[in-house]
Length: 117
Image (cartoon, rainbow, N blue to C red; front, side, top):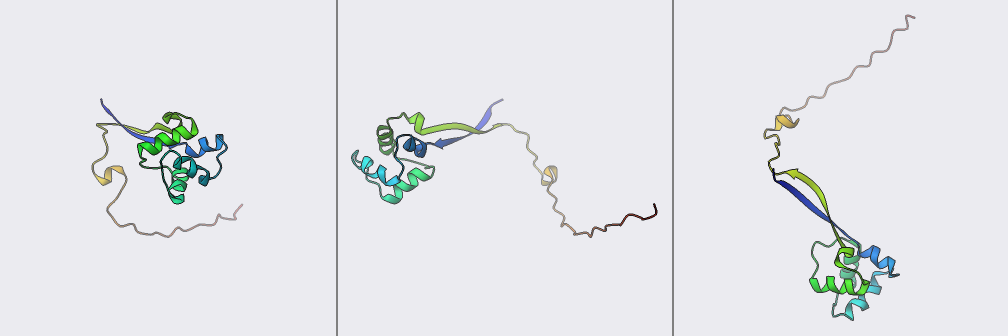
């Protein structure tokens, strides 16, 4: 049986910068510029603080050079979820707990215990 896998990744730029005593995103700008990568303050800030969905290969290579690391140090893939390709998922809403009938609110009566001890 074939399996489907959802792959996620960790973006470790901020941690690698901290290990090399680069604490501010603005410290990265001249280092990138010296390698031919011209990014605005906002772009560098997003690159450091968020997980990028895509990154140009030259920028990725420049970061590896600046941080003296390998791509595996910067970008760490992992398996988020595994599922069988032929998973036997319910096809009808009633099979997985969803009803099409409207819910009716009901009152709950609390009955006090008898004091006949």
